[in-house]
Length: 198
Image 1 (cartoon, one colour):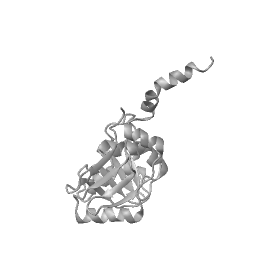
Image 2 (cartoon, rainbow, N blue to C red):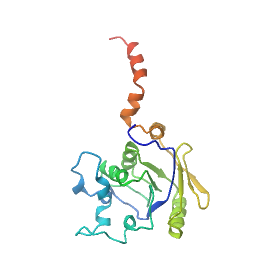
Image 3 (cartoon, rainbow, N blue to C red):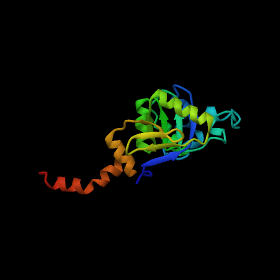
Image 4 (cartoon, rainbow, N blue to C red):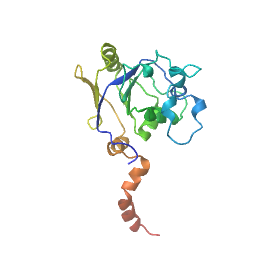
């Protein structure tokens, strides 16, 4: 398996109520030289997390010890800008397995699905409910149920449904990337090839 299977995730979340977060903010261009997916989490939101001298900006959410979890709650239009895959790599490498927003840029959304991060698009009203709940209590838990395509704010039991491509959903449930998917079908492919003329 390329990634951990994603079935049900129950976690606290980091709230980032900023709209139009683009991929250059998620992972600045100067960190795109590496070709492996490792180490990008250190530079996730680099210019928002650190001062020029490398010290942490204590007012940024990822540096605030009261927040934790495997879910990132973002503002509307999350992941806009360039198509760099590294943005999704950085989100995954930091430890997030789900990003929730009221709207995603399509390319970022697909890049996340390719690396094992579930992008969950909810209504603006429900996103606000989650932000409000976390503001009141940073230990607020959110449950993301991929099989039933449902996200629930456990403190209030309010929920919202989300859409996902069926192929990507199946891959996430099984922990497959595109290559794993094909390898899983190897026997079917071999049988089919036997029926075809050379």
